[in-house]
Length: 323
Ligand SMILES: [Zn+2]
Image 1 (tube, rainbow, N blue to C red):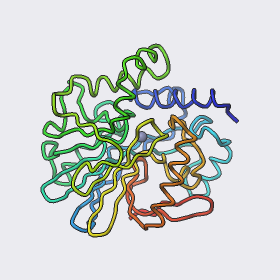
Image 2: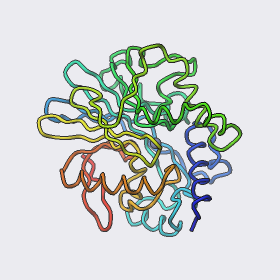
Image 3: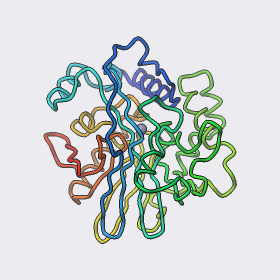
């Protein structure tokens, strides 16, 4: 078992490697070849909920060889056994990335942006799938950001530095923004494992035009019928988004859990990217309990396609039931 210091170290390493969006991540070097994940086609799924439409848009999938580090507080043998019991490979995990689009009247609201041009070959498909669903980047009026890890923000800007959703306001959790743009904290991170994350935030949010960036407080109504719900732990200021229409709710869970086959089934397990694993676990348990009781619909950024559906109690945790 890790002590707390080793534990945070592991979290920092995982997050930094992840967010930097390196073409050959550290964990993939010299890794056995487990093949390429196949992407769903079409790469979008639309559901009606009351007066709104919710569209899952997959950005891609990364196949990640399973190592000791992925689940920070469980033996690898147990992790492998849980995957096998669900007919999943015990040797690797497929981690999908799925932003969501909410179409409400004349509003087009995108939740998170995927890896854009900064990930591997099986990622960066958001715009392609947005087009397949019938929308152009210029149609998006609002981008809601859940947290500042690279797979959620990198799609905001291309490699030339241009803003991809050029007409959109970019709404961000105020606390998350403050954490990652704190110059003292960024300077302290220089040379350390977290440097990649801070640099990535600078590249993405630095020199954003006046009026484009709109920070919001937890609980704020970020668009008509869409509320921010604080979900701290995975990162210091992460926000989920709750969409309500005609008495029904859809909650975009962001990274409340990484892949549900492991972290919904075992809500007490910590993915190495959880920055405060204890708080993340409390947030996870409380959120799932509330959503299952309300029979609400969920969308999970790292959930298997179509990444939307419902959660059901299962053993000492929860199971994802795709729509
Ligand atoms: Zn993520």
